[in-house]
Image (cartoon, rainbow, N blue to C red):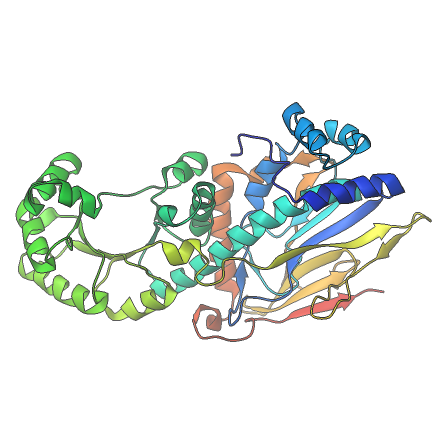
Length: 437
């Protein structure tokens, strides 16, 4: 959970827009903003939404305290009128959106804010920061889970990213189907399962590999996982078995040709009487490396760098656009950007997923101005997270992460089987707009 005000996790121009709109008198116009991605990363078939819960947690602390207001005043970011407005800032509008863990496609309205322009404007950067980072991680993690099949994946990327990003990445990975994380802060905040044993430095600390293994087994029990590639892998496996016996939990391989190595290590373990000792592999894995290991006798995967960097796509390319606002006559008018290659669709959106008789998704239907005409198998996609400033606490905390993981599992099962393939292609189902006007 956020422990500090989140309101300065924003861009300078959000507050200068606020100042100018206060000056023009338009700041308090009722408005509708929408977060969406115009396209998926090159070759990806779907995206996975994550970050909503973190946004909602941060919203509770999105206020301006004396120190922040003094900074804004001293550095002349905004004028005295704007400072006065910010003194009592609290979001009082409504927030709707897709549930975390949900599959999304181009133009899916994953988050919708209904409020004054002023309130929605200052939240833009904070919202996009969380959605873009977490959805990129969750989307990559989902592909890795598809490649891994029934074998569990462990998130191990904390040392390859910013310390707060590491917590967010662990959370997003669990939502997308990872079994556990190495990050203790993520475990503490969100009730996630944490795992870990020892690194090469632990072996190097001791006078011999045997001494290191004996110390680890004495401390953690024979069910621990021993890292066997600090020196010679075959010697390491033999020593591990001699120290821990047939109840040795696992050996970890972190280098070399993992496919070939896993095969002969499995044979060696079996020959030594350790048929139940598992093999875990790490070492710069991504979804393609995991898929390549599919025929190898591997029991679990530890994934780090590729996961926390979105496996080549570190952002989900979400944008946040004003799509409707009240005019001087008191009527809502649809507004949209028309710049080349950056087109958006005006109007408040309503989204459903159309399913066939086998409960397989066939298309994403987005109504402009109202819900699409109902079909018996339509599944509504929008949830209400905040009503008149009041947060629904079901969407934050540890329970929300568990529900998001289940939502992801259920959503993936709805998708055509082609969604689980790693081959490049178009979105696995199309997005279709239905304009009611």
